[in-house]
Each structure stands twice: as structure tokens, then as C-alpha cells.
Image 1 (tube, rainbow, N blue to C red):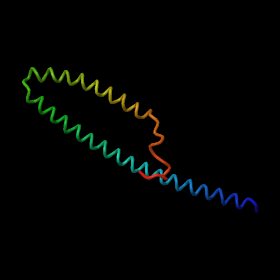
Image 2 (cartoon, rainbow, N blue to C red; image 1 turned 90 degrees about the vertical axis):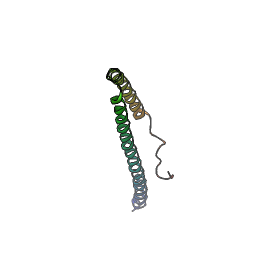
Image 3 (cartoon, one colour; image 1 turned 135 degrees about the vertical axis):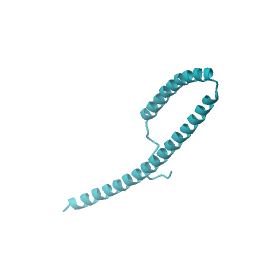
Image 4 (cartoon, helix red, strand yellow; image 1 turned 30 degrees about the vertical axis):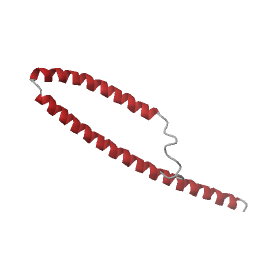
Length: 106
């Protein structure tokens, strides 16, 4: 019968841990939703900016437009490489400390 208090204590600890995990999951879901919304907004802004640039390029005389398209391809390749490097650095960075155990407010 002495194991009964030990089991009760363990169950209490497990319940507390479960509640903590639920709070953490909720915070992560909110953070994911915010980041997804931000990504979608940035994609939309990028598409609009590209459309404006394409419209400006279309207004250029034919010789200048061809020169810019070649420069744009080079700049685009550099930007893609830079973005990939930034993304890999962000993934490699430790995320500890950004999310608490649910005991602090955001």
C-alpha cells in the first residue's frame, strides 16, 4: 500500500507536464499561424513588386530592356543564394528561449 502515494505523486507530475505541453503546443500553433500569415503577405508583396518591375521594363526601349533582363537574371541568382544562406542560418540557430513553458505571457 505504500506505493499508492508514490503513484499519486507521479500522476500529479504527469498531469502538470501534460498541461505544460498543451500550453506549449498552443503557443507554437499561434506562432506558426503568425509566421504563415507573414510569409503569405511577403509573397504577395513580392509578386506585386515583380509586376511593377516588369511593367517598368516593358516601358524601356528594346535595347535597354534586354540589357536589364540579363542583369536581373544575375541579381536574381545572387538574391536566391543569399536567401538560401539566410534561411539555412535561421534554421541552424537555436530556438531556445523564444518559447517558454507556458508560465510566462507573450
